[in-house]
Structures are given as C-alpha cells and as structure tokens.
Image (cartoon, rainbow, N blue to C red; front, side):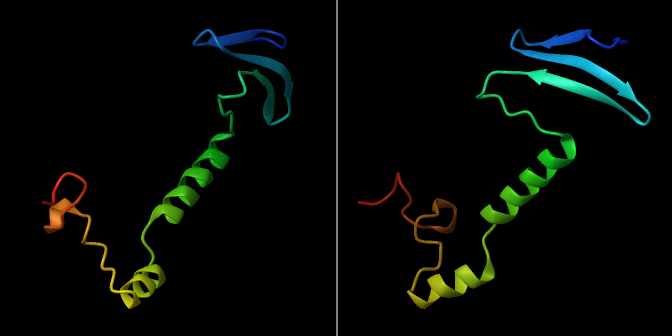
Length: 89
C-alpha cells in the first residue's frame, strides 16, 4: 500500500492515519482517534506492557511480608485446596 503526503488510511471507522511528511530516514504520521483509544509508538507500547507485567508479578519481598502475617496466598486459591469464592460451607 502506498500513500502520498496528505493521504490517509481509515482503521475500523474510528481511526485516521495521515501521512504528514516524508523526511530523510522516516515518515511523519498524524493520528486522529477517539480519546478512549490509546495510540502509542510500538516500542513505547511494548515497554508499557512489560512494565505492567512486572508490576503484576508476585514479588518475593511481598510474599515474605505477607508470610509474616500468616498469609501464604493459598487460602483463596481453589487449585491449591483453598475455599476460593465458590467453595466453603
């Protein structure tokens, strides 16, 4: 697919990508999209995903802290024999 400066692509009826310019080593793009649709450069998006996964991963220091309160993380996990949300008396 080829586009010239000023030409655009439409994605899913809501996102418009316009070629703003062509420079040595790159293309300048403009993006119009609803506010609820995140628009990121791929390398930034991958860093956000990686950061979110790291933040959500159980950390050893948190496990130690919870272990000090007698919490093992198994109480609510049905796969480990805990009561979970659907179990119990």
